[in-house]
Amino acid sequence: MEYLNEMTDEQLAMSYIDGNNRAFDLLLSRTQSKLFTYIMFVVRDHEVANDIFQETFVKVITKLQQRKYTNSGKFSAWLIRIAHNVIMDWYREQRSERIVEPTEDNDLSNLNSGLLDMNVENQFVNDQVLRDVRKLMDMLPPTQREVCYMRFYQGMSFKEIAETTGVSINTSLGRMRYAILNLRRMVREHSVALQME
Image (cartoon, rainbow, N blue to C red; front, side, top):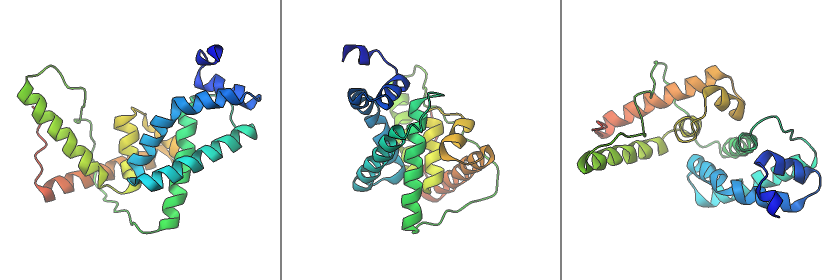
């Protein structure tokens, strides 16, 4: 087992494909927390997140056993892509939420969680602003919330987001733009102060 601990996620996946079940156990323990956090952030329901998490890993095991994974990139991005597809299938089944798609340009380039040295009061204010932004993000439609999460919490590029979600880069950029517009609208409607110190 010691040699397995030294393997990358990609190497563990290939080892599992070659029949090493212990490699998958380690791969699961390494990735389950990040994957569940992603799913929970998108669906915002613990029971649904558990179901999607389990379905995702059933699909992962199936795809690995069918040798549909090649070590051509990050295993975690492949895993997130599968989870994304499972989530989208779930949303299609629900058909309960319509997405509002405004048409103006905007960006979140001025939102930065890497805060510089500051005094305690400023830190408190900034922490509150970030909590408020997170609450507002939770109110976004699923596709917009997902692109915000991938961009700002996982640090993914728009190209990576597009590949993971199976859409074009323009669609990813559009979803981010609409998310920003919706966030700004919610800030105005709820009179939220988002001035960081």
